Length: 342
Image (cartoon, rainbow, N blue to C red; front, side):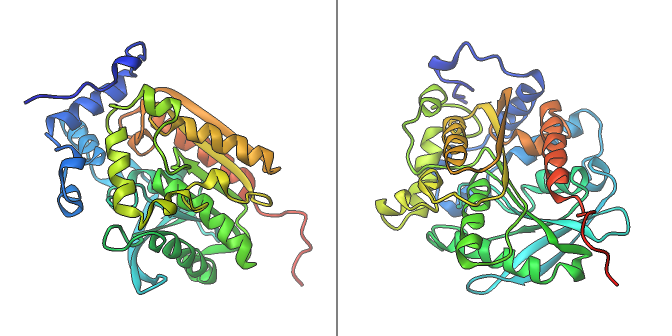
């Protein structure tokens, strides 16, 4: 079988982290088909990076059970109201008595594929490292539900989570938004929507290699046009299936670098070096700073898109989760200076 190179010719000087290369090799061994050659329904059945992590763990003779990989975090599944019907959600709760901080989390997959199961590693890791309840939601996917259905569901999930924080053993005054890739876009866009709706603002936004613009001509798109597991043809396929018209891709909910970002909370951006989305993360950082938002961006070299959820086998994935957890805990710590209740 012909295998495309992990990197484009322009990126041959890039050194891939050995942990990361092992996952890329495991994914290639599962023989995924190129997404642009598939329908969305077919694409959702393809081997995922999470499957590659599980295969690598089995090869290493390790337990692949999520609770074994991230001890001290339990989860439950339930349905919650979305913008146009019920959505499946997974609630992660760390050990302890609580009430815990609350993170509303959105999975990746270009708004077309992905699920709370596929992105379990990132959400579960955040519950542990931020010592927080995490609500991970299966928002509606395109093309069955075109933009802005995903963004509408993201805001609805935030509304529900804050309103029901007490029953989740969480503190509605200590809330954050987070997500990976398309979900990182949703986290930023939802913070903007929350501000505009006059709702209680989150205290932190975590955007892990977010989609921040609706086009594919940045320097990192050129440098990593053929990267795995995300590349330029895949992103064009995602955009084609998500947008109703070309104008949608310029909408500030997708091109969040052009959104009104003033008044957003402390933001953390996590980036991978070998990622076509790397440049737009840099652009987002610049836009946030220009809007007066406190932002910190950390890039991990030698790793690719999706590394954040691979903490079980990629050391930088664990380091990134720990870094995100510390950033979130700093923002979500109890306000010890508040007047005690009488």
